[in-house]
Image 1 (cartoon, one colour):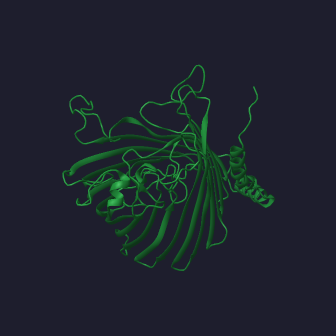
Image 2 (cartoon, helix red, strand yellow; image 1 turned 180 degrees about the vertical axis):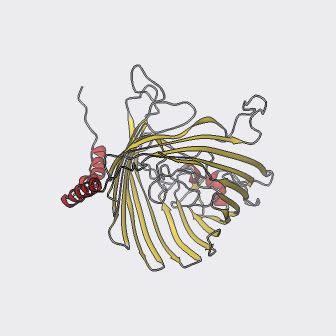
Image 3 (cartoon, one colour; image 1 turned 120 degrees about the vertical axis):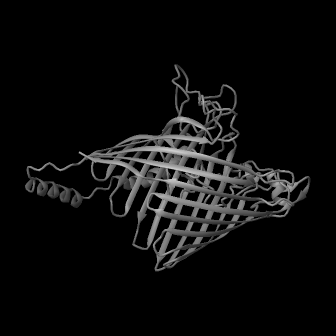
Amino acid sequence: MRFKLPPKLLLFAALSFSGSALFAQATLSDSLKLAFAKLDSLKTATTTTKKENSLTISLDMRVRTEFRHGYRVLPTQDTLPAFLTNQRTRINFDYKGKRLDVFMSVQDTRQWGQQDPREGQTVVTPTEATTYPLYLFEGYVEPHFNDKWSVRIGRQRIQYDNQRLFAENDWRLPGNSHDAVRLVYNNKINFTNELTLAYNQFGENAFTSNYKPTGFVNYKTLLINYFNWKITDKLNLLTLNTGDGYQSSLPNDYKTTNMRFTSGGRLEYSTYNWYFTFSGYTQYGKDSSGKKLKAYYIQPEIKYTNKALTVRLGVEYLSGADSSKHYKEDRSFVPLYGVAHRFMGNMDLFATFPTDVNNAGLVNPYLFLWYQNQNKKLLLRFENHLFYSQARFVNKGIPIKKYLGFESDLRMNYKPTPVIDIEAGFCWAKITDAMVTIKKSGDTKAFPYWSYISVRFTPTLGKFSF
């Protein structure tokens, strides 16, 4: 049987491994320096044995209480607020050796009152991912071949750039991790390149590679090439090329994997108190349903920072489709496995794409004002968003206005000690008829708001050297 790679996959491979071509640049001077360093260490060796292994055990526990009346779902005049408390507890084991690192994180997440305290059984069917059994959130080994090369194998968090496309999603109660292999090159000066590969199955199949997990949707294949180059002390360039594949939803068509490709990057320039950046990505290939994909995303931003105040002004622009037209392609940009909470408002009104915008895309101008006191124990944030549909949306033959509304978020972080972080927030939004129409829920006469308070503890329980 002949196997022929599709042209889009060849294009993605060319983009990815163009960065990886720089992966193997090791100069002769670096090798000589390493050789002389080893020689010097042999000369200065004594009978005293240096402790090169360490094990750190730490706790990461967060308890959050929320008062919801418009978080993620727009309210109506008849809806009543929800009041709840959830908890996430992680025990981390971090081993570092001379040429091997091992990290494990065991996690428990729960909604207070959702389990029978006498039997430990869930008493209601959760409507959201709030209660999970005790499971391994992260568990990987990372052998280091030398000071620059390593490979990370196992369950791990994947975070790149500002976490817009790949994030740990730590705001979510369970967070997010991936089963993958990551090859890392880092010259410790100004250059990093990583290649990540993943292939998922729901069980040990005897035959075929049919992957249809029950209860959730997940990619079947994942490829990531991340390249970060600090050109000067003021200029930085990074690129991110990704391919994620979803098995065809057609019955018995496990042989077809629809590949979606995302290519782009970010250019950053900083000088004195100013920071300028421009990020852009294009998506091509096929969406999960097999439809051709043609979408894009851009984000320019300017930031000013002095000793206490930070001002950020920018816009996010996600492409969509004009509902009055018929396209051969899917034009909705999906920000992959990134976090929306820190970019498009804390109320997460636009967290699931393209569902939350009804395929109309989104334009999100924002203005952030941050204040941090001198000892850095207190951080105050005032963040504001305007929301517009990117493309025209027609409802029952009548075009609706593009302006969807605005959201304002107030947030405070206070660290009384290095291992305790207290966070509180109050957020509200003003919605229009256009937002109600696009999201298919809500009432403009209702007032969406949401408040919360959380306490996070991150103490080190023990640290051993041997």
